[in-house]
Length: 97
Image (cartoon, rainbow, N blue to C red):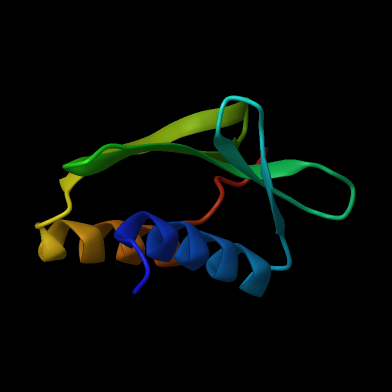
């Protein structure tokens, strides 16, 4: 059985691939969703513990990467995990002007 952290990471990867973006890990465990020209469209700052996970989500905006939302969800909070997944699924970039 997969750990919930693996399920969350897999979900983010699958969602970004459906958008035509590839997911890359940085040395400090940030996930960058990039296009073929290596332009970052989304960034996920994930941290997993024994009890929960936190994720700060950024997306490309008019002034570069902009903060969107921060999650802190206990592993036992199925509703919070669903809310995070729905947010990732529905999020969009802010159009650059």
